[in-house]
Amino acid sequence: DGSVGDYAVIGRRSGNVYYVAGITTEARTVAFGLDFLGENKPYFAEIYKDGEDKNTLKTETRIVYPRDTVSVDFLENGGALIKLTPVSNLTAPSAIALSESGVVLDFSETTKLAVTVTGDMTPGALLYTSQNEEVARFENGTVYAVGAGVTTVRVSSAKDETIFAECRVCVRREKNSVSEVAAEAPERVEPNEKFTVSFAAQSGMTIEDISFIDGNFSPVTVYSREGKDGRY
Image (cartoon, rainbow, N blue to C red; front, side, top):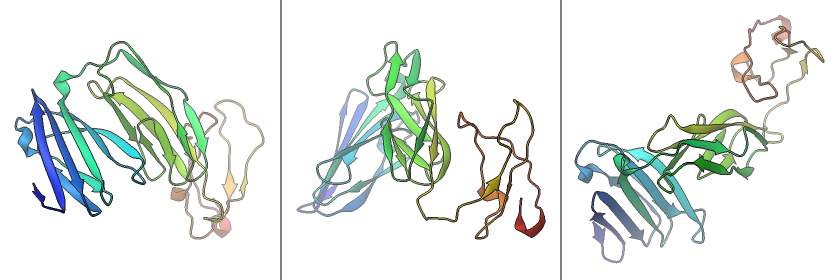
């Protein structure tokens, strides 16, 4: 597909591996339909596209099917390449590990997590996901803090997603973005002891807007009760 002097999209196949490439003169979003893959089986997609500017390259990986469409944002005079490999072609590692089990980031901060794999595997055949991309994105080993909260990022084998490693990510709120919450709580409690945290809701805040985590970034079970004067 294409238009002279405007854009071009070209596809090629080598064995059962497909390559789709595109270039453009103007910034645009291009939707690549994958129905040409034919048989309804999973493919490992490696997407190489423009980053923040013309001097950076962004890499994404995902599992796709022939019924799917992959949308790619092109910069002006930019381009992209998609490599599609049948998942059946891949080899999974025996184990995956991350360099950290938990990290704390400021809003808009980034950090790189080192990924270690054990055993032979298809190079690059890993998937990077986040439970909540409104808190943090996880792309090719880099964590991007995009909003206050807590989430878990995961790297898994594209061949066998039961082989994975996770990291808990806590993102501090953006300075002056919301009102602070003044809380009252015991200075020390014993393991498994129940205790009470009291705070005043501000700016329409409710218990649903609050989450509690422990020192290992794991969620703490909360039993809420609204008290007097909007306190919980």
